[in-house]
Length: 178
Image (cartoon, rainbow, N blue to C red; front, side, top):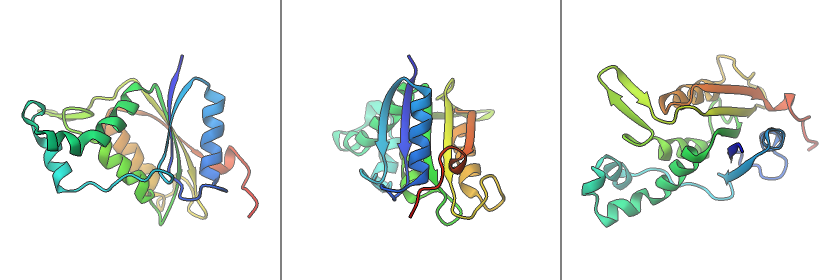
């Protein structure tokens, strides 16, 4: 059975088109679902203690280091377990919402989701598909003003997810009445 990681990033929890579109994509895919709502349960911004802990050899980490990485470990485990990652993402100010950027920061872990080799970085989360339902109030999806799509494509590729599909949320669900 397909395991789906469903992530919603819109701050709008009631009339969000990206949320409606991502929910429809997940329903159409079918399977078991792990859901993470980045508005209802905000993620913290990374800080110096987290950055130091992630670079510390796992065998040398203190209990405090491990505590700094607990949420990141949980988020990474969700991605590792998934066959498909569905993200409902609005474009805010031409790019990803801060909530989605926080998820990206917490999942990018050297020796865990990527590694550096003599040939450059290598993503470790291979064999997965990502589908992103992008909502935009005026920035055409895929246009040169849409920094969200290009950023997500590069980021997901960096961690090993190269099968990435972007869909305009308005093509999946009709705009909701205000």
